[in-house]
Length: 185
Image (tube, rainbow, N blue to C red; front, side, top):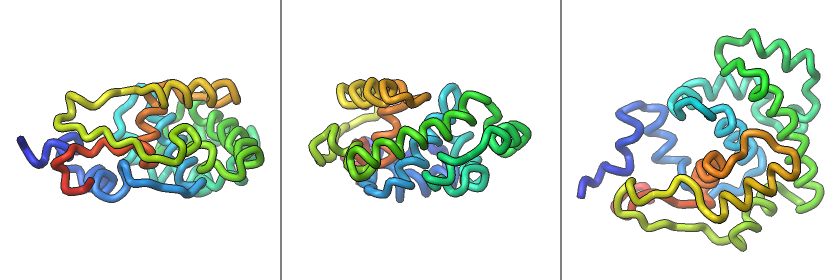
């Protein structure tokens, strides 16, 4: 088995390499980081993750470092102005979804104490480790991602279908899909 198979998807890109090696599938319990990953995953709908990761710093600048309170308070005019920002994906629904999703996250924080507590409640605080031998074995969605997606949509979030939600679960480490031979497991 090729020991680099887990890392093959980034094709030598230093930004994606750093993401794979230091963030992807690593348990994270920080609400702001989780919100950032939720927003970036939503922005990636219909696009490549590479495109989004190369725009990550521009997204951070545009959305106040993904500070949840600041995103909740973004005015229509501020969001509208972002439609002229060539450094982010200028899709109106995606841009405006950041504020709406921040508002939902804020409500979740009030209900559960933190966004983290809510997210990890779907797995009783346990990481799901696929122990995959090949990338072909890796799913694109799961029972957990379908349940979380349905609940997030019920709460009013956008761009949280079960496939995007599965990628989000990988991004924040609730799911560990590093291959069993990956040195970054």
